Amino acid sequence: MATTLNTSYNVKDANVSLTIIIGDGQFGSSAVLLDSEKKTNGHNITNYPLGSGSSLDGKTLRIVTIVSDTNPSTTNMDVTYQFKGGVADQNFSLSDAVASQGDALTFDASFVFHKV
Image 1 (cartoon, rainbow, N blue to C red):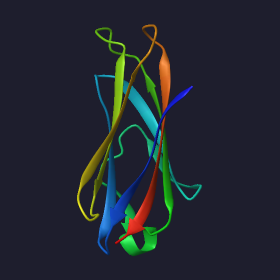
Image 2: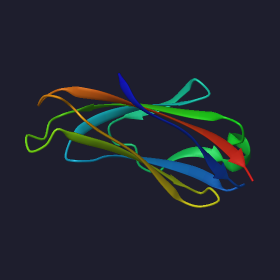
Image 3: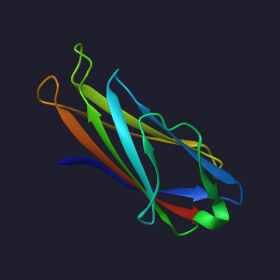
Image 4: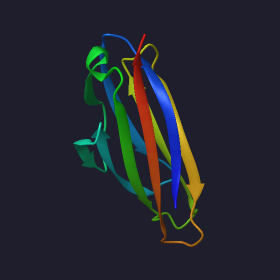
């Protein structure tokens, strides 16, 4: 079962970028898709250019992140999605915890872009 987020992000004409932060000292890897087209993947996605607000208008960005519990001090996990270049820079977060040390969780986030 995945921890999910479905929301929107308001954009303007400026270029929009994405940073994904895996918190709580855990390890994770993400796949980033724009309208089902793979854009990038990996464990270190920082200031990834998504395109101009005009080109993103009406499109859906889906990010699937698998986080593995590698921190022996906690089973808590969180993923933060940072967007820059829209109407306002904005962070969105998802949090959950695994039942047992060493387990993994899937975080599935979707963002619909709206040009305002």
